[in-house]
Length: 286
Image (cartoon, rainbow, N blue to C red; front, side, top):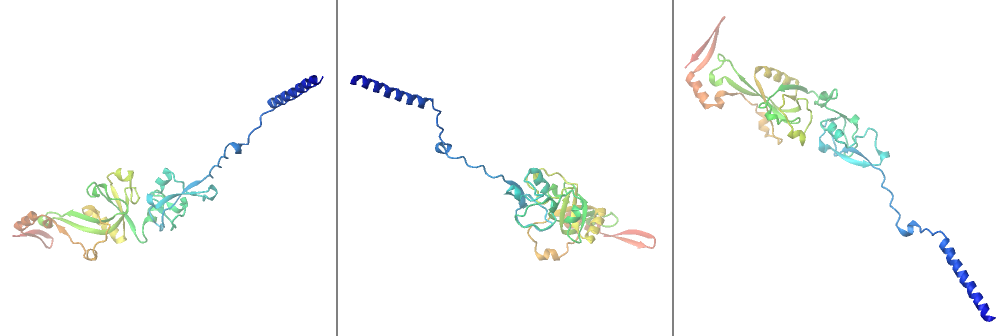
């Protein structure tokens, strides 16, 4: 009897254990929290907007160059209205543009703050107060092989040949400096300053150079262009001695350049034009 009770109890315990195992197998698997298996992903960085700003303090009238502006990142909601993006098209538009007002270093560039070279009134705005703009024709020689750029300081030289009856052979060709230390403000239709990179390597022979002059200097240029050939010489960046600015340049004749021409003039003698009433004659003194 006792043995039968033990067998029955063992069967009950075995059935209970098998039931518990079956319940665990049929129950859905528990999910482990993501924080327990891996660290939480970092939040994405906040969106940023880019704009062009002044790289340094720029006075009014500055002709902008590549090194005059830099790129700054700000939050989109802090981007000022009219800000210039740092795209290649915007940078090409800025090169050579003229500032209307003074800009502090780091100030954002605004399209309303500058004039582009092709904007109406740009040339008049570039000129200093009381100055004029006058253009002279140049070629590969008189234009210094196309190496003159806006912003350069130049001298203007006139060479002319006098008529045979007006001067002896040794003094028939003469050169004179019409203007000294004048600023180039344009080459053809290009009004940029300090061109670099592709612009400098792709230089072409200029046909006209526009100079910033006074009203009296403009008259001298206009007359000189009718007298003979005008040529430009580029001045060094370093300042010259004060004496060079005080002593006015004189005329240079053919005999001053060529000793052979000077000797030929001596052998020919001096020629003088004599006017008597309505009669004019050339007299040669040997």
